[in-house]
Amino acid sequence: MKYLVMECGLSYAVVLDGEGRFLKVANLGYEVGQTVDSVVEFAPPKPALRVWKRIVPLAAAAACALVVTVTGGLLLTPYGTVRMQINPDVMMWVNRTSHVVRLEGLNEDGRQLIEGYSAFGKSMEAVSDDLADRAIQQGYLEDGGSIALTVDSEHEEWKTAAEETLILELEVHLDGSVQVTAGEMPAPSATPTPAPTP
Image (cartoon, rainbow, N blue to C red; front, side, top):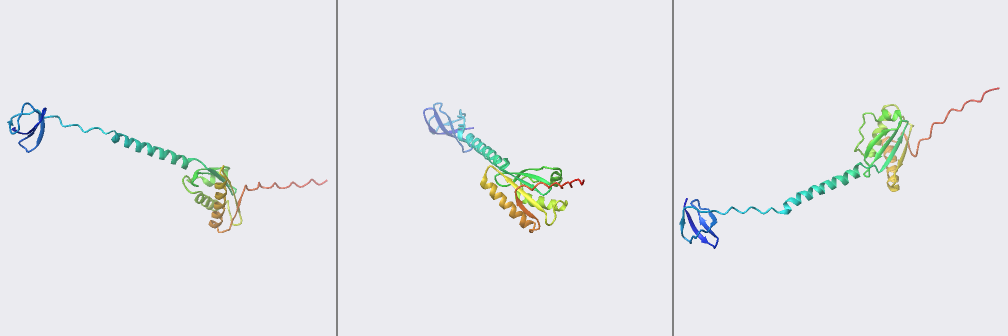
């Protein structure tokens, strides 16, 4: 292939090849306007590896990991508990956003009440409504019955708000047919034993 020298520098020359491309080549004593049969082409410069092209994805990944860790910690860490006593005795562990992260039956009836029920991630209001409905369906709760709620947390403001919210929610959901109270359900009173007759 023939090359036409277009420009000359001390160590380089710019030539035009037969396909119309300009190439930067080693200047082997060329002069402008000279035609040559072969040239020593400079290797095209490699694009400089920019540090930020590596750092940005790593920083983004680290930020995502931090968000997932912090959010996961907030969403999975119990912030308080709600004990719901009907006769089935059930305990809900609730996170900061008032969603249930764990549910456990505290007695045999409580374990039967929650059997097959998935509460994880549901709001505590939805879970309390569902448990009341299940208690009615399974015969544990009837009109005139009662539900005792005990809300516990280190955070007094959340505890008070959660208790008020749940009492109101259950009263509305059950149309007032069941008495909903705060605090533990009193233990069943023992039947007095009649005094022996002499």
